[in-house]
Length: 326
Ligand code: GLU
Image: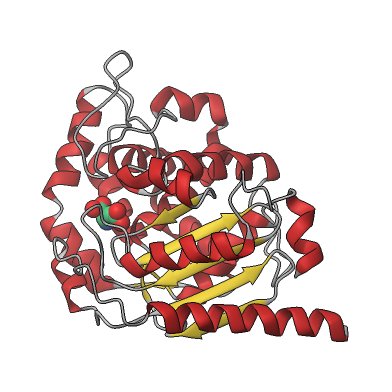
């Protein structure tokens, strides 16, 4: 690292730490309890990690503490399904329109019976059912291998969170069977639902999430390990869906305020991706009424404004700008 690069790295590290200091006193929101095991999280946990598209890591707080990935798994399985089946076949099963409804809404597009998009549960369950049909009993290993490659280390999953959701996930089962009723998913929907519950229980920490995000910001190539993880064309599809549908029924306001692709999960993780520049991850389990991490949103709003990350910010001169700055 040259002296100038070192200085810019220190500057970004300071910024990440100042975000922690600014938001740590925010205690608004509630932990998710509809999956009983999630209720055991420590509400005060707070970690932030920023990874640049050339692999520099800046982190603070509980950035090493693991939590379940939950809905943040959805863009990553969507990318796998796109690669396995091709975009046209996947589009026969799931759309790309924001629904404006809650993540667990039981609603399909009237004309096609497709779920609106792969970021709500109905769409994500469809995607996972396609992956189960493609890989069979190997599906979970395939998924773990891909997520691990994106994170740059071997990931594990939380058996008790998986069991907790499998025991209580009646609404997702109802969604799965509705999809089966309309012929939108292959027959073995019960096995596919178990795979979906397990996928949501994959354990990550803030740094893993930020590296997974940086893999997307670096055109599908993990910038820390150098491994090619996703096909470059599919990364574009994944980020587009995250941009329009990633933050539940807050996605429109998010695009307005933050203006970058992102995905959140009910365990309290958020990952935001700035194409070719960097990724921001935050972990804080207190959620707002829509299921987004309260501190996570505030951190991303502030960092986007501080660094001019919004896609349409006048400071954002495209993918080369921050590279020069960082
Ligand atoms: N496993 C959760 C569910 O399907 C994921 C929800 C989320 O993170 O939004 O209900």
